[in-house]
Image (cartoon, rainbow, N blue to C red; front, side, top):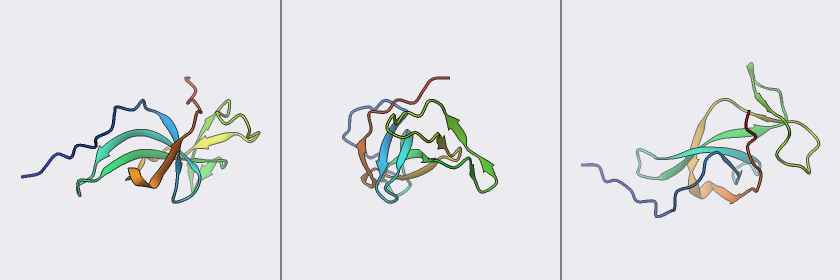
Length: 98
């Protein structure tokens, strides 16, 4: 019998940006989930300045939510997941509506 894990956190508003501690770069958090090992995880997309990741075209975000950065922001389309402990503070940036 599998146990359901209580994350003990309040519901968050998605999407939002957080610092990804493994890379030191921002990440767009698109949801959360419980892994097979019963660990609370975020589902996220990488943030970059590159138009492509390999042969895949990234999504351009205009205007850049980070007003202090003059370069355009791109978000990788592939959704990844990692433990919530690997993410830092929430950035005040807003994901622009299309």
